[in-house]
Image (cartoon, rainbow, N blue to C red; front, side, top):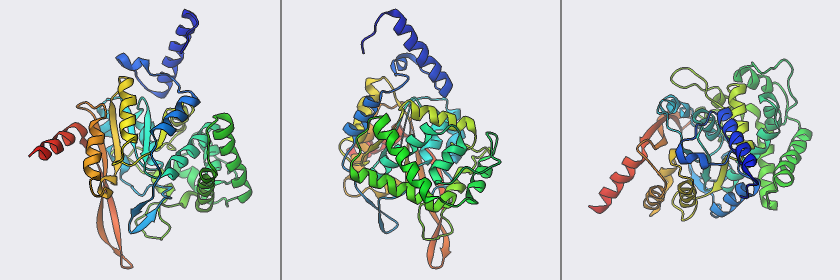
Length: 366
């Protein structure tokens, strides 16, 4: 970067400090080298160069590419403990919208979403576009669900009130088409990202799915009673009884909007046992003197086959870690059967990454 004199340098530093303060991010030591905003070109270069080939995966006996919504009701339970750890580093995660809640609650320096499905990367680009063009939560939900803005809602409305209001408004196919054009304009014309016809088709499918499902859209449409709706996940609470979702308040949404506008949530296509994505993130963070604070793996480790678990360990060991770096993991437990189908509950736990890597390496040497 070329700096034209001390005035530009001062202005740049002040802008970085102001944005960091607004997002609630503290920069320590060499971490001050982090830019306040990634340029569109830098952002897209990371997405393209870090990504691997997209793949589907087998989940609950089906080949899936379209997990648009989480199914983990317990994911907020670990947030207070992670906040109390007071460790600010980079966030890494997998899957759809639960990452946005973790990011707004934990306020990392930067976030990378690594998922084997290209559709997930595109889903996060859709979220990015909608967050950037929305002035508040009501407008965001109007875009997301392709429903006209209900009356009687304000900045102090609860997440429950917002979602209940949108439940009563029918989906508008006309609005869905307008919103799709808004997303494409934002991603392709404003940011200059290059999307293929297949990419555009995937974004269109996501827009139509959220339009059809509205606040009651689920990870799976089978009707299983254990699967939470989008609205359920947005009003979940942590052990303090506090709502931490990115839709819990206007402040939470502004934090998310700040990250998205600054290009600091980067979705990448990558296999946990792959050869590129995780290692590329590790090199990038090391080059910026940053560590991984949290790595949300959901229950993906249980799906790794063959030498996948060993490759995942090797990949994680290349990340810049310290004694505070923690995994966020999800455990699914069978609690009964409904109509001959299993019902589940989830538990979310944290584990120290370094201890886990060292234990695996020690066992491997025996």
